[in-house]
Length: 331
Image (cartoon, rainbow, N blue to C red; front, side, top):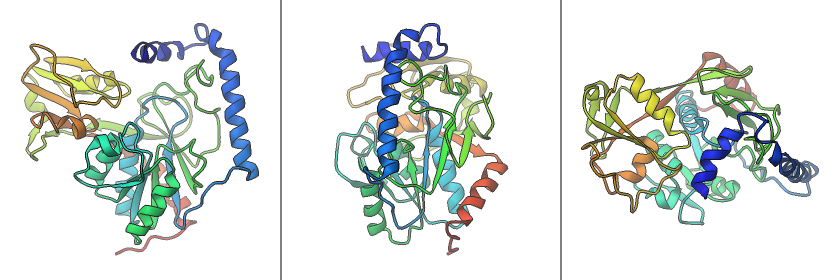
């Protein structure tokens, strides 16, 4: 049922003609979410403010919008500008429920695949907790030199006060413009945001670009690398357990890979008991997000990093806002 709904709802959300039977439910969703926001605005529900600036990255549209590659690009760019960055996350899909630090060897099933990926790619302190404020306090206690916190996927987590908000969209824009479940919106749009980024090729409205591209090198768990172009004529099993696997496959084809067997898996796929289809090619390609789980059982799989590059104008806008909070201390 979950897989069926995951395939059906995005199609309904492309127009209002098919989604209208769910519209009354979207009114109820909007009423409840609006009431919740009002309670935070009035102070009846409390937002925790941390002692360093907090930048929240998220989206108002459900499903993958390229948020995690954007988060990593922001973290790396902020480090280059002298900020000592830490990352907070809920750790979606993890088997644990406590507040914990994500270490380089933390199993993804215990901390979440996206936090594990961010920690390994960016090398910054990462903490996960259901209450992101708890993660922030624990991170600052363990890493007191941190002077900027980036919260991955937290626009609707109002329990954490924030200084800056970055909202990420893909080519879907706002879909049919309706709230869940009649549409893809988690909250009404337009809304205030410090920075609007478009990770797709066809931005639906004003904002800056966050161009995504595959790295030219794939790598394995043992650190070995090979040029992606070297697989152009090799039979390859391309697998992706992300929100929109078709995008990964399209990017592989655009990179010149001509003999792909494509396998789309559910987002946050757990590979603990997964087995490849019979007759699958010997060479596997996956996303980095999948690799942090897949490598535990199949270390020979090749992971292809997905990189995001922000427009210069986006960095200028972000730098100007950060300068009003606190200037970084260059080591």
